Image 1 (tube, one colour):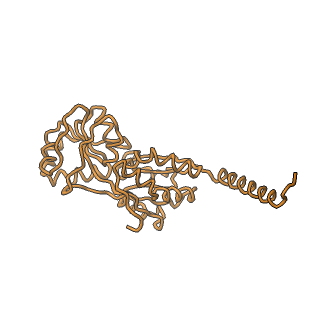
Image 2 (cartoon, helix red, strand yellow):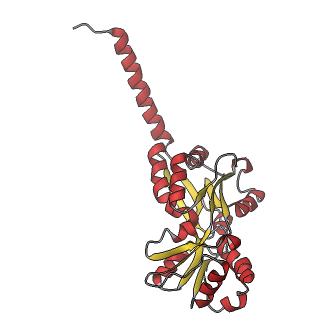
Image 3 (tube, helix red, strand yellow):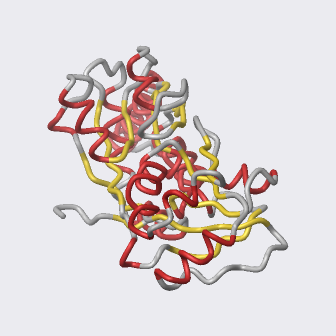
Length: 266
């Protein structure tokens, strides 16, 4: 048997490079700490494992609303010094944290727009919410209405209810869901008949009926952005996560879960 020394050397070098690459990936595999708005929770059920398979890193995610004072609220997690490499928040809330020096401004990236929708308990007739007047009637007909302490809840109480002229009537039937619990969970449990929250968060709960989006005239689309922490221990892994969430694969998952991807450069 004739041994081709050149081919053998090339094969040996190639094998060594492959081994080095695997070892390098293993060495650089890391826990990437993430703070994120619950609006991304349904999408991350699919996207999180995809990122982990691609990079070998492990995501450690803490969920919470972009606003609020509960222990789970992202501003409180940040204030309390919770470990974080990257954060995903409603853009104005993230901008405020950037001004406070918590995140690197040059890394801020707009990912998706999140609209508000309506859901009801299983077994209840789905109300008509297709027009402003129909939405108003549906809210007044509900015995209890739930919303979060986050961005959507702030909009509902401070803008939507007053704009519909029902702020006073809604006080007695309003239920604010605090922390990382989703409004849909409270509806599923029977704590409220009707709920309003980001569409992606409502659609993440299987045990409720999603009714539809708020009419365009009173709709609120919130941009969700990402940025790296100034104290990030795993900047490379965190930056790779943001890049992964800008791929066509991620965009398709965002759309499927009720979010509107923002194209690069927009």
